[in-house]
Length: 104
Image (cartoon, rainbow, N blue to C red; front, top):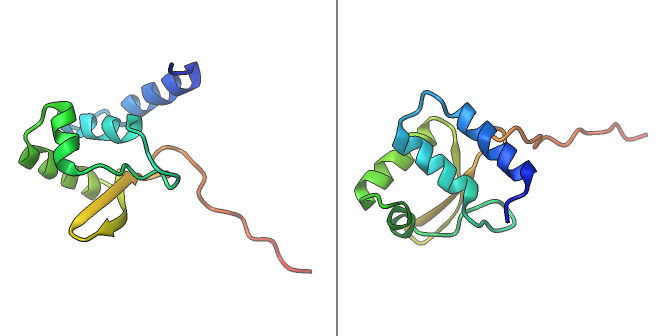
């Protein structure tokens, strides 16, 4: 069951992606909603993700490349020729910078 906080985050994400094409928004939402590992990476091949949303694999790959170039996705790891991505935490409004404290 999706919590009301998760629903609100998803609605905010839809608002942030206004101006993107429908396919680009679909890819962003797929990465936002798909199960991830601890780092936030979606550990699924492009072919499987494309199939999940009913997109031809070449269309999915081209669209995902556009989303990467727009700064929405970042590569987390590469295993052989397969690359895995996650939504850029900064785009999600997460504070990923840990403030440093001066040693005394």
